[in-house]
Image (cartoon, rainbow, N blue to C red):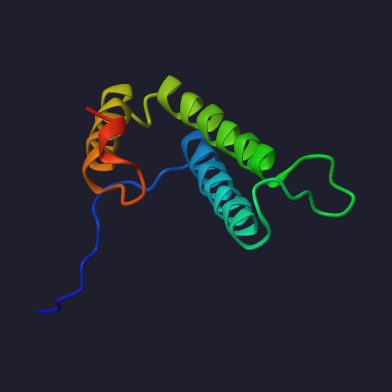
Length: 106
Ligand SMILES: [Mg+2]
């Protein structure tokens, strides 16, 4: 008897798969922009680029949010699960942020 695990669930295809691929691409673009900002500064603009690294992070986060909307519209992702994640992260940030003064948040 083999220990291999074979999922019996269908893999996403069609529009759900395409949107998940785009979500992965956009998340990677957020990572790229954030690492550029960490290396060169939030206010730096790459040569030939009219937008600062901060603006470009915002643009890429917007791309992620737009893609999330479409995934929720077609019920690949549940809005309740996304809302749960948002609330959970807010609580974690209140507890674990190391650089925010304690007196600023109650
Ligand atoms: Mg993008």
